[in-house]
Image (tube, rainbow, N blue to C red; front, side, top):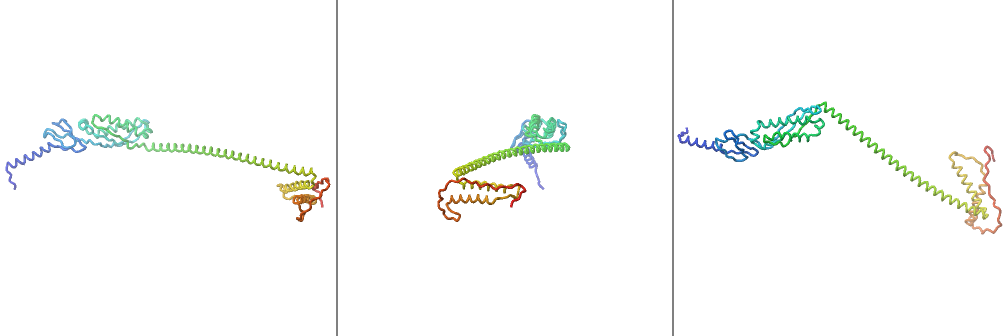
Length: 341
């Protein structure tokens, strides 16, 4: 058993007292906090983060205030809008203590005070707006709430940095009605877009038809011009041929007359055969007249190429006296119903 004398006990007491004095004299404040100092129960000063010296047994730590920015959840509450619609809304608030002394001694239970103040102003701000404005203007609601609440908490030495509306929930029947309204609005927009598309399509089709008609008219005009030009050239060639035949007839060339008649006769028979209203043509034909015309064509060929019918070269024709032209008549067509052997 340890035997302690009175002096040893005194020394131990002095050491314990010195330790207690040291703890009462030196205070360490962590970063992000500020301590208030009270002397005989009265606020005197604020201790900043770090090592601080107090007067033992006279000064003591009053309130330990968190000066970091803090978040405060605002519970869900019912709000009646300007147009008598009931909605549920909740929010979140951010605040920071700027003056620890005011926050410690100007208000009791700072968090509860800020929470209730924010809830009251949410009902006031949201209640002054219509439902449509409420759902579409959250930024305006947040700004108005921040301005009003921050002005109200200034005497408490704190600063409200932000207030955000988290969720706004209208009643279920109102949500269904809004859904039907949105659906009807979208259907109306779809019908308008469809009508505009149909109108644009009709305009484009009309413009295409117009351009096609213009191009077709230009093509028909060009074709008519080409056709007229071809007929004009054909008429010029026909007139030239007629002029040549006429000059030959005037000169007394019998073969030219026979050639001209035979050509017209043959063209008439071809046109009759190409008629669409008949497939079989029954008509009398004088073969002797046609053969006579063909013989005239052969005579013209012999005169042109200078040979007989056997391919031998004939002697130049002798000068003969001019004769009267003999024109072979075209075959006569008997009247309908008569017979001819």
